[in-house]
Length: 93
Image (cartoon, rainbow, N blue to C red):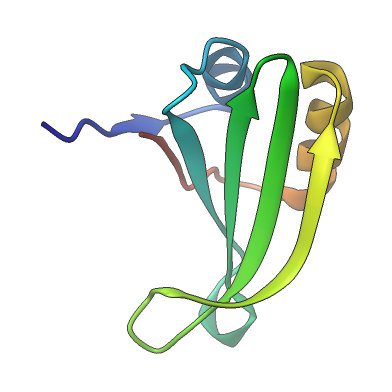
Protein backbone atom coordinates (compact mmCIF):
# COMPACT_ATOMS: atom_id res chain seq x y z
CA UNK A 1 0.00 0.00 0.00
CA UNK A 2 1.25 3.46 -0.94
CA UNK A 3 0.67 6.33 1.51
CA UNK A 4 1.22 10.02 0.83
CA UNK A 5 0.38 12.98 3.07
CA UNK A 6 0.23 16.62 1.94
CA UNK A 7 2.31 19.05 3.96
CA UNK A 8 0.58 22.36 4.71
CA UNK A 9 3.21 24.44 6.52
CA UNK A 10 6.96 24.75 6.95
CA UNK A 11 6.67 23.56 10.57
CA UNK A 12 4.76 20.49 9.35
CA UNK A 13 7.45 19.87 6.72
CA UNK A 14 10.26 19.98 9.29
CA UNK A 15 8.36 17.76 11.73
CA UNK A 16 7.83 15.25 8.93
CA UNK A 17 11.52 15.33 8.01
CA UNK A 18 12.64 14.82 11.62
CA UNK A 19 10.42 11.73 11.96
CA UNK A 20 11.01 10.13 8.53
CA UNK A 21 11.32 6.36 8.40
CA UNK A 22 14.25 4.85 6.49
CA UNK A 23 12.00 3.98 3.52
CA UNK A 24 10.15 7.32 3.45
CA UNK A 25 10.84 10.70 1.92
CA UNK A 26 9.54 14.14 1.07
CA UNK A 27 8.71 15.41 -2.43
CA UNK A 28 8.64 19.18 -2.83
CA UNK A 29 7.59 21.10 -5.96
CA UNK A 30 9.52 24.33 -6.18
CA UNK A 31 8.74 27.26 -8.47
CA UNK A 32 6.16 27.36 -11.25
CA UNK A 33 5.85 26.99 -15.00
CA UNK A 34 9.13 26.42 -16.83
CA UNK A 35 11.17 27.21 -13.71
CA UNK A 36 9.64 24.35 -11.71
CA UNK A 37 11.92 21.82 -10.01
CA UNK A 38 11.34 18.71 -7.91
CA UNK A 39 13.20 18.36 -4.62
CA UNK A 40 13.36 14.93 -2.97
CA UNK A 41 14.63 14.52 0.59
CA UNK A 42 15.32 11.22 2.37
CA UNK A 43 16.89 10.24 5.67
CA UNK A 44 19.37 7.46 6.40
CA UNK A 45 20.36 7.21 10.04
CA UNK A 46 21.01 10.77 11.14
CA UNK A 47 21.94 12.04 7.64
CA UNK A 48 19.59 13.69 5.16
CA UNK A 49 20.03 13.66 1.39
CA UNK A 50 18.37 16.26 -0.81
CA UNK A 51 18.29 16.03 -4.61
CA UNK A 52 16.84 18.64 -6.96
CA UNK A 53 15.74 17.84 -10.52
CA UNK A 54 14.34 19.71 -13.50
CA UNK A 55 10.77 18.76 -14.46
CA UNK A 56 9.98 17.11 -17.81
CA UNK A 57 6.77 17.91 -19.71
CA UNK A 58 5.11 14.84 -18.17
CA UNK A 59 5.81 16.17 -14.67
CA UNK A 60 8.49 13.55 -14.00
CA UNK A 61 12.06 14.21 -12.80
CA UNK A 62 14.49 15.23 -15.52
CA UNK A 63 18.13 16.26 -15.17
CA UNK A 64 19.60 16.27 -11.66
CA UNK A 65 20.64 19.79 -10.73
CA UNK A 66 22.25 19.07 -7.38
CA UNK A 67 22.61 16.54 -4.60
CA UNK A 68 23.40 17.63 -1.05
CA UNK A 69 23.93 15.74 2.20
CA UNK A 70 23.22 17.17 5.65
CA UNK A 71 24.29 15.92 9.07
CA UNK A 72 21.29 17.38 10.88
CA UNK A 73 17.72 18.53 10.39
CA UNK A 74 18.78 22.05 11.37
CA UNK A 75 21.30 22.37 8.52
CA UNK A 76 18.71 20.98 6.08
CA UNK A 77 16.14 23.44 7.45
CA UNK A 78 18.40 26.40 6.66
CA UNK A 79 18.69 25.34 3.01
CA UNK A 80 14.98 24.55 2.66
CA UNK A 81 14.05 28.00 3.99
CA UNK A 82 16.03 29.47 1.10
CA UNK A 83 14.32 27.22 -1.45
CA UNK A 84 10.72 27.75 -0.40
CA UNK A 85 9.09 31.08 -1.13
CA UNK A 86 5.42 31.38 -0.30
CA UNK A 87 3.03 28.45 -0.32
CA UNK A 88 4.42 24.95 0.27
CA UNK A 89 3.74 22.22 -2.29
CA UNK A 90 5.12 19.12 -0.57
CA UNK A 91 4.14 15.56 0.25
CA UNK A 92 5.54 13.00 2.68
CA UNK A 93 5.58 9.49 1.26
